[in-house]
Length: 346
Image (cartoon, rainbow, N blue to C red; front, side, top):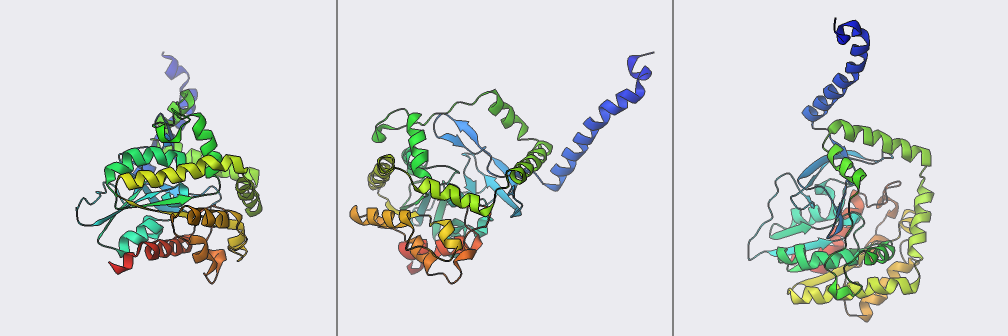
């Protein structure tokens, strides 16, 4: 008698979980429910990027929003839908958007994102969302010389956030050169754990387990609204000498845009804490500082903080738990961009 027959009950106990996992995997795939938040893979050129040709159902660990699908293209950038094709007409206006999670806007559907809104209201435009979570001006420099240049934009819109200064400081440590104009790569190598995660990401069951894990972590850390505000206030208080390189990178982005015959515009994300308290944005230190910087260097500023300050109910412009813009916040941002770029006049 074989071991399996002699231990049939034990065999059943051991095999049952495997069958259950397979059943759940098949069910999730059939239903098209593969959860995700902001999946990243380490990269030797852009430090990190999103999985290529990848899609998932977005969720927030705090349960603030869930359900819309996110699609990444063959380069790992967010697009409207699976197999989206960027228009290549020579006569239309082409706008490239650079930024972090605010520009990527995974927290809302494509139609609710400020890029999606601009696209839907202007049939003569080709838009490209180059936003990726935690990207900042040092990474933008690499993108400008590659993806953005290949897109051949007529306009480039750059979004700045308070944590960009700290991010740039870390990225410069991993760049191929300390000279901003010579940066070609910001390298980060994947370890064994990263490689295993990359493989598991293609299992819908593993994604479900990860979702539950993230939700439990969120609850255990008790990430409240005030804790996020403290974090944001902390990153705003960056030392002046640490801001210098980011501002130099911004000026270099302007030079790069001139070389590819594109107009470039900049905007800074308003302070969330002030906005939720309906106090945006006269006392927003970074917004005032960035406004003065753009005026001093004759840069095109999209005054999103002013647009937020003029909104009747500012508290609706940011999610309470998620750090990013709500659908309303994206709409106000889209209107500010459209007005500055005079899109409605075309």
